[in-house]
Length: 174
Image 1 (cartoon, rainbow, N blue to C red):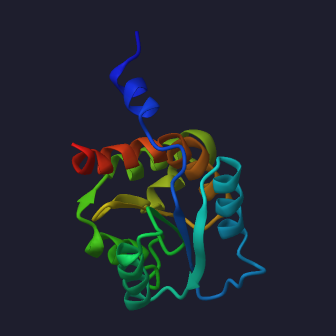
Image 2 (image 1 turned 90 degrees about the horizontal axis):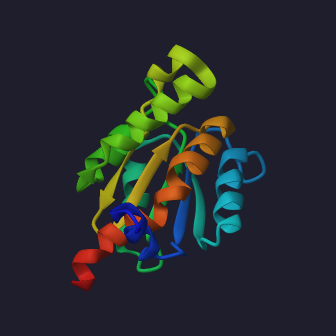
């Protein structure tokens, strides 16, 4: 007999259209290794990429791209990387939180736990990874290093992406 979680995952969409947003003042399409890694992992798991943008670490630019994504029928999930640290210039978390309808605190908590346990020890407390819903979309904001992106994508986002969308969509289908 399947658990409720297994049942939910079996009912989840297998393809989720994702927008990749790299938040950086210095990266270009050629040097955006983390954005490229997100794209590769999504494609390997059968998720279409609806677009890939690089935006400066500016509150208004980040919220503007989130508003665009919220209005886009071709975007179901927004995956941001970068700007989640504690430097004065890091405003991704503040911009994302200002737009969220429901925050998923477990994403940041689990990301920091896994970072602590697997990679970086007590420096994990410097991460401010965050996730939540934006209307009928899901938003994940993760640090910009390739190691952090790989960890967030392989251990948290990809295993649950369809399940999250099933939960978001279930009110529509009921």
